[in-house]
Length: 360
Image (cartoon, rainbow, N blue to C red; front, side, top):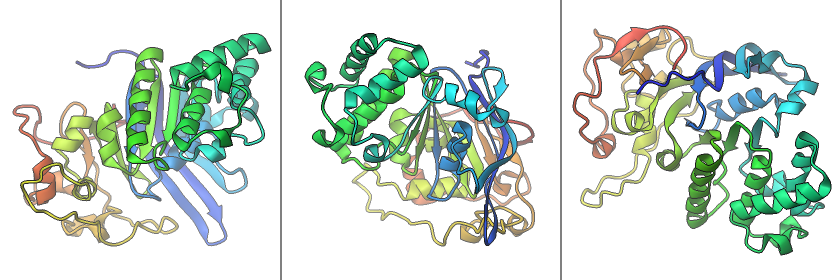
């Protein structure tokens, strides 16, 4: 069913650059996406694809002397965050939009008790008294699964395990019940068991608080458990976007095929080795004039080296930037590993057509 509610966040043609001695690094090159209330959008891609830079731009946390939003809009609460004054952004960070980073030890202050760190945003943004903030902080710590929260309120980060510290970071981020939670590789530093627990916890908290989540990861396997929508990034651009089932079971971009082929399969009846994506990401000081993925793709066409592909629409919610979807392009079968993950969804997908405009 089509979502008719007003989007919570709209990113329109966002471009972010870093000015270094070697030149201008065009880290984000025209990103568009929409986030609705209570929805989880996963942004997926290799290191250097631009996914974390995109979210840092949304939060206005780019390094001041080097990083800058070159152009584009970040629309939230009827205002453009890209043009907001720093003082106004400080009122939004932590209260309306919160960030969970991948390393809890760099997110938590080792000299402050965990209780004080959870209570601090409540005092700052919600004007709570210290006693009320403490009561609320204890409730939140319980919500994220910290046992004996009253007793452990006065303990320090080093007295907790890695998984518990990540729960405390999540508690701090959720303290003011933000409308948007940005989770930047939140399970990377955790073992597999703890990863699963943290992902389950985030799903539970999303249901409880109605928070929308932007989930940054390089691991498509994680995405299946948390996302409603997926945006695949490469070379500073989104190259494929759709519902999670569309990306997993009807992927169209060769880069998405590469990411899926590098994922282990649960099908043990076939002996198919994992496939690494050859080559390295593009030089974004001198971005390629065509499809940025073309030099690494065995499916590249001549036009891929000359012109950037436009958006092609596969379904109402599925969009792809690839010349392979042009009516005149040769038919190409996806790799065997991708076929193994495919399931039959008859009638769901239409013939791709070229489209313009912002992705919905």
